[in-house]
Amino acid sequence: MSHQLQYEVVYQSGRQEVRSIGYGLLERILVYTLPNTPLFGSLAGQVQILALIVPCNTGNKDAAQEVTDYQQTYAPIVTDIRNITNVIGRVHTRGRWGIIDRVPSSAKTVFVEIDDEE
Image (cartoon, rainbow, N blue to C red):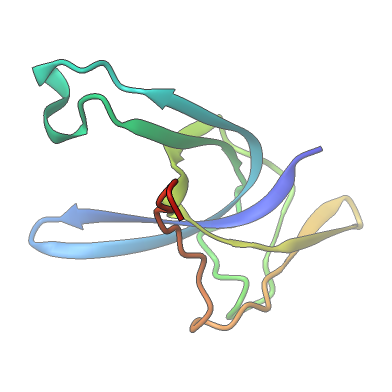
């Protein structure tokens, strides 16, 4: 069973930083260790955690701000798990999925490192 989630991607458009909110279905979490080679720079030898997400075609709407639904999804993407900002709900009605995002903007998912010795 897939879980509905909100994710946020930040990218550069010229000199401006742009934040894009999306909704998708979490299909799988991938965990792997990068090879310890110079190709990966400061990430060499580190564990990476990625999320396989099937994005929903919501017309770039923010469900916390306006009624948002979808019928179609896009091709799956893989992104850093830290781009997942919230787990949200959805409801199926009249052949469409409505997104329920009632998380206040002040509440965001935070990933922290845990020291194995603690």
